[in-house]
Length: 173
Image (tube, rainbow, N blue to C red; front, side, top):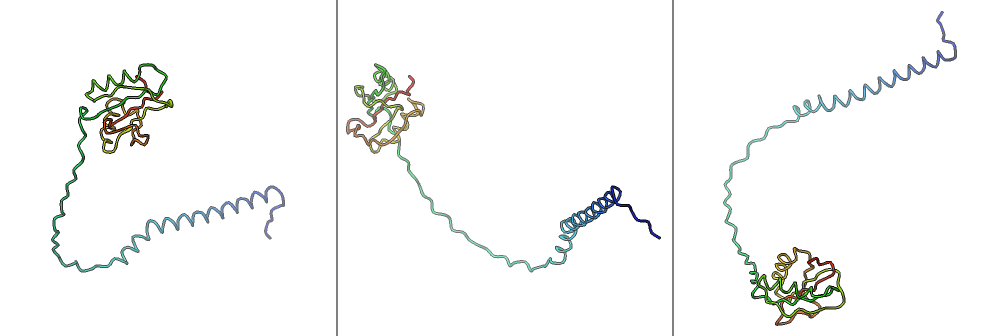
């Protein structure tokens, strides 16, 4: 009649081999199905669903020229038209006088330098209304953009003083 396997290791190995072969066949079938869907079927489906349509009739469209707009940017006043007050809010003696002399050399109209309290960490450039571009120009040329620029909310500017520079302790001369 037929031969039967004895229980034990041989039977376990045979059962394990059967399961591995069965799972290999299932995985191969799934991979083959995905390959078939990606490689073969798109071409078949595309060939069957292609429809031809009549070309659209030619039309001519005339576009009106866009209106031109001109934007005029405000001109930055030259340094000779900007009055600057330099205040020292550090513990370094004579710092405001040195910076005021440097700004004078750059062509700014400089008021008598003074001290300011409280001590600030960062240099601040405060400007009167309408002098924002000049304050930014001053920050770029004299302070290499190391200063904080803003509208004067401390009432330090006036009709005679357009820009106030308050030197902070982080200023490196």
